[in-house]
Image (cartoon, rainbow over all chains, first blue to last red; front, side, top):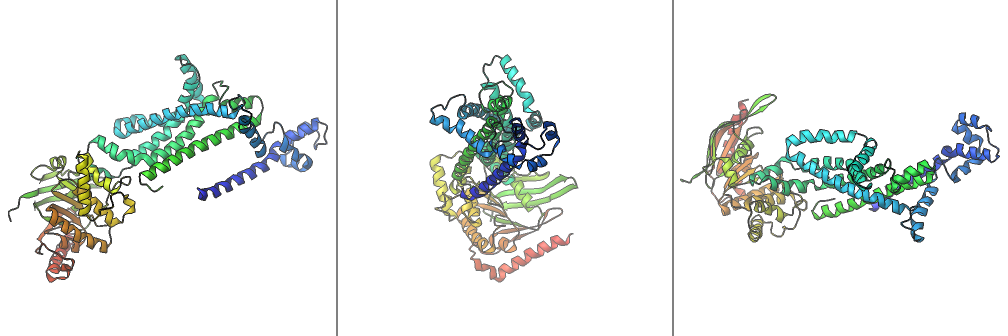
Length: 311
Length: 260
């Protein structure tokens, strides 16, 4: 754990530095526009001329205004501190005020998204594993199922999501829970299926021949060899799958007119021009994904250790 | 010397169809193996010794000729679990402890749990691995892993033991030790053993019968009855008798090669 901590923190630090430096050029135009409107001394003075000037020349000619770009209410690119403050305001501070489940709390929205992610992950994983089992069991099913699974991933989910919602409401399913889970599982099943096909085929010829010499049945071969051999592959694909399920859940919230969930926060932030809301929702989603993947990683570690594997 | 025939091959041939044309892995191979024999198959790569063993085990299907194991077809012999097979690599399942690896065939064959426990204990003692039941394969040396895989093949009541270069990947010191143990095991269990090897001293030291094979097409070029006594300490390999047999095996191998 400590061995991986240092490189991770180094990269994180690097990203923060780049991010911080990028704030000045990204926000300079907004800052100058605001300053000009307030009667400040801006070079060039005309808005049209500023539009045609390069970002670099604007920065160099208006050095005194650069600092202002780090403290805007509606910045093009907020600073890391602004995002951090907004995150705290919508999570920790909410808890302290006893408003954890308020509509302004990201914990509430995160919980909504997490539920869709969970159901989508469950459905996607089941479909993925079942698909892999069928494909490994039967050559005919392999030839008929695998191409469709691949094609399914070539269809942009953003295009498919509204149709899923329309069709599921037409089918008489109330609420957004089910279509969201369905969209989420659509992204999730594929990595699980691919990983499990590989895992169930992992046993080598010698391991298979051994069971043949015992005259073992197909079911015994499956349960005593293929399933245990596939477990390391399963966990690797579950980790990819759960991240995909989260993305699917967020995508599922975008075109549905949802008002709760991290995806809805991102969309509303965009529509109302509050970039801080978008950025904090984005980070909440990233943190959520990190937590989910870490949980699965720990489970994998413990389970494979128990199975005598060196992890 | 009228022991019953356990394995009988008559004009056995096996041809693989490849993109480069047919490959004659075995051609007109005939051999009788008697109960209690220790038969070694020796020859260069591609001489069909492993293929022959795999035919006995019903892991390959011959394209011509006849072969019987215990008087029935290899398929029926396999269904009735007539043999234990030891592979070149120990092939232990890494997620099972040594004890549970030995339990695998017993589980599959449906032995009652109490009997499984008793058999595991007995065969692990037989290969000197008592006390290693709870270890995982990676915690054992290569030689110990191979002994565990022999224990696994001995756990159920098969009279025939088919061994495909079981000690090929081990160093010579470990190999000597395992050869000595294998002879003791054979004396104790009275099994019929078919043993594929690359090593002349190993073949001479272990066998009652040495089958020399040569490639392209895979065939038997000599069958040598080994005159050494049943009781064989390791230093028997320095006796003139031993060297004479080894010499004859070497001659047989050379004759096979000159065919090219």
